Structures are given as C-alpha cells and as structure tokens.
Length: 470
Image 1 (cartoon, helix red, strand yellow):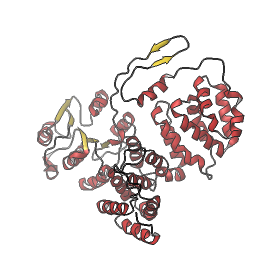
Image 2 (cartoon, one colour):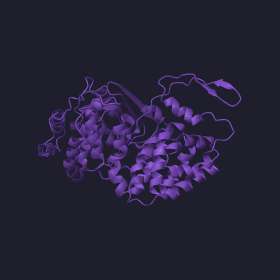
Image 3 (cartoon, rainbow, N blue to C red):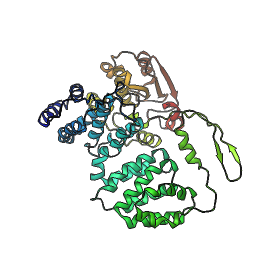
Image 4 (tube, rainbow, N blue to C red):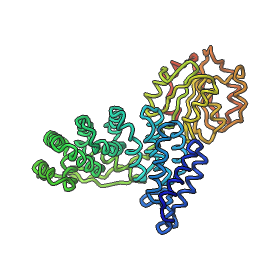
C-alpha cells in the first residue's frame, strides 16, 4: 500500500465524485481507487473480512472517509441519484462498497419512500457486524435528527412484540439517539424499551447491556427508576436472571442500586421460555433434539418441522392503474397484508411512468411485481426487458391490448413465472384479447378467470395472496 498523500487522496476522491451520476463509471473508478490503496501486508489469500463472508480491499479507513466527504453534498442535493448509486455499491458486494452504500442512505431525506424498504432488505441480507452497524446508525442519520418521531415509529416496528427477530436491530438503532447529547426527550425511549427489558431474552443480553449502559449515561435517575420498577413488578423470572448475568458490565453506582433486587432467590432456575427457544432455533442449521431440565422431570424436546422461507416484502411492488394511486383500495389492502412492500405513485404518460419505475427497481433482483390494469402493462414491459430482476409477475386485469398499446407490446417472450387474474365481467379490459397476448409473451403462465369486474373487489377478498405470491 502506498503512503497516503492527503493532497493526492483528495484529488482522487474529487475525481471519483465527478462520476456520481454515472453508476457504472463510478464503480469502475471506485474499484481502481480501492485497489490502489490495498494494504498488501494484511491482505489474505481469501481476501475476506474478519468475521464476515464479504470480500474486502483492506483499504485504510481514511480513504473511505475522504470519499464520503466528497459525496456528501452531492448526495444530499441529488437523493434520487444517490439511491441509484447506493444500489450499485451494494450489489458490488465488497465490505468497503457496502459501507459507502450505507453512508449514502444516511444522506437521503427521511421522507423518501424508498429509503426504508432498502434499509429493511439490506439488514435482512447482511450478517457482517460492521455493515449491520452502519445500516442501523449511519443510514438513519437524517431520520434521527430531522424526523425523530418517524424514527421512533420505526423503532416501535422493530421492537414489536410479535417480531422478536428484529429486536436486536431496534436496540442497536436506538444507541446513537440515546448517546446524542442534543436529544433530551428520553421518556418515549424508556416507554418503548421497558417491555423488552422486562422480557429479557437471554439471546439479547449483550444488546440489553449496551442499551442500559447508554440509558444510564444519558439519565442515571430515570434509568434507575425504570429498572427498579421493572424488577419489582415483573412476573417474568427471566428478567432477574438475564439482568443478573449482565449486571457486572454496568457502572458500579448502577450495580449498587440494583444489588438487592438482583440477589439470587431460593427458587429453582427457570427453563427457557418458548419464545427464547424459538430464537435459539433460528441459529441452528438443522432441527435437533435437546434436553431441557424442568424442576420436576426431564423431557426431550420435539423436533421442529423445517420452516418455510419467508417472502421479503421489501421486494414486492404494487403498480396501480391509470387513474389510481398508492391510496387506492387494493394498494392499501396489499400494504396491510404485506407490511414493508413498495406502493409508489405514478403520474403522466406510459413513458413518464416507466421513467419513474426504473429507479425504484434499480438493479435489484428477486422482485415480485403486482400490476393492476395500466400498472399490469408497466409490469409486463419491465419484466420482458429485465427478466433476470423479476422472480414473479402477478397481473390483475392487465391492459395488454394491441389497441392502443401495440407499440409497447413488441417484446420478446420470457419464462418468468406469471399469474394473471381476470374477471369475466370486466367491461374495461376484455379478457380474451389479453389472454391471447399473454400466452405469446409468457411461457410460464397461469391464467385465473374469476367471476368479477375490472376492479376485482370480490376476488381480492377471496384469493389466497400468500399462496399466490409464494
């Protein structure tokens, strides 16, 4: 690795920023710059980041910092282009490029509707601790500062009682806000985290320790009061057990405050709760039989059936019809059934709508596209032009009509799995002409004819959407 000449580094980063609006060129020059600063004394044969499965250039942090400094003002002034570039950096799959992608998300206005779907999808994809930390801290920078209420709504979603698998993300994301000396409204945070502390899953004891220490540093009196209230009122025996395990990491004054409430009792230690057993199972590659001691006997655990893979809702997008919007009945119902899915608004001509759609889908793969009427035409054209990005296409009474849309339907057939749902009473888009076009375009097609009109109100309630999207 050459010695870092700051003047040269700034010049290189400045030149790199010139390609901000051209992702392919930006990626080419990013690779060259990262390769230029490779630390060959640390580079291993496998070239994989420690504790991760990501490739790494092992460039010094100062290089990424200088790149971020050059990109910051451009990204904040051009958030749509920043999203495109973030997608390209993420898809590159290297430690350094994904850190830059997480940085760019943190420059996007919190009102941007595509920010949270990306954040949700990326946090589910990654296990690298450094990337995960960046996504849950750096990527949420503007939301924490500019729209704290929206940020706390996101934290509530992470810490929802039914989503224990996302609790770790919620606790991690809270730490920068708690540590921010300019943030003085601690009570809402205490209200949000108190049920999590009372539940006290042993699998999250490290996260709970970091959270409690951060809260204590922010406000010792409020934190002590909350912990004493939890310990004195809880009916959950695991609360005391887990806090007893982590109390040695607390500041000495906090340990002294809690000592009496955490003294061991004569009652036997409890077995793992069902929720904790389910979390532990998530880290087991294959179902196993475990022995769990109970106070009275010993019973073998039953083998769990393999779990079906869950659909990534952030990769589901609904394309509304010509005179509809993201607030239409079907759009709202889809959003309720599949929280986190993308339901954007489109306006203008077909060409204008496609220009609005392309940046949303970006270069990501595994999209499930649901298109209704005119949105079905949009979904069809995108799928035929980018078949490798679409895992499944669902069309609801799609406007695949030679007249007046023949110029858009001059497409090559694709084998993307496609389901078309069409009503026999549709008086807007006739069924048979659409079927004729669809059978020529889709080689893997299922056509479902239902007793309904164009809007498919009855069919929507009766169909099993989880099965259709699976």
